[in-house]
Image 1 (cartoon, rainbow, N blue to C red):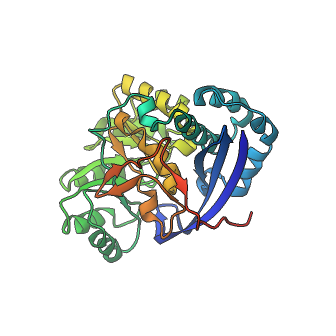
Image 2 (image 1 turned 30 degrees about the vertical axis):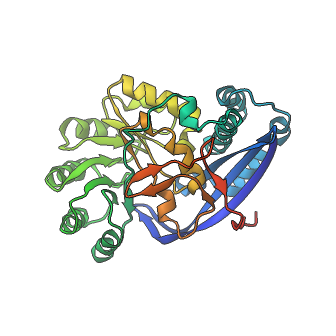
Length: 344
């Protein structure tokens, strides 16, 4: 397969702030795999929390360029198993290759990826839209400027309850709260009790990922369901989350792509847990891949392209929370000719 790497730096529509950081630009890496006249696209994002940068991702993939270039794709699952020993220390890089392999595989068969799996898309969940941390006034303004059926509200401030109360005055939409590890036990229990009457559906990762003792307490006593994010990174983490969370948020970038994500979905559902996939602020390339998992999911957060001031691809479209698939085989993503790679 021919391997091509495309690094990008995309500006956000607004400064994107969560409990531990703010950023105005999202660095991304798009991987293209070409075989038999077909090209598959995959994507991964940099992330400071996991010490991942685009140069590190490119270096990891380039170390195995000769192997990839001589590889003949049969199925994405086999490709993932062959690449895993080489990239098991870098799931972000493995994800980009995995997504590209699925796109290529489905394109060669002339089918959309969900069609390969025989899935029914008629009951897909809607995606939420994220409101990052800001002043209460600015958060209200962002919400009013972007009417949506479901919002994910980033929290982790001294005014968290006041924020939700203020936002609730302006919409009847469903709220989901994401604290990104910012709270302790008492704060989680107090906020959950307050949010239950304010139309909050669940709380995502309220406490630090290492605080399993605290999570056990809030799992037993919290007034709202709790969804793991930073506590559920790779496949092995699903079993650990049983009895501590009511559901898991799978990030393709963190777990290594679609291949392990499908196994994580099956394991979580077998344990009676809810399943969602989340965004790492990917462009339409990565978001289009996530879209094909929708029939498996209870919830989804795939608003990455909506948060960007500029995109690099066309593919799935998002209209009032509903995902509309591109009328193309594969994941449906194609790079825009105007997309300008960053210098790396």
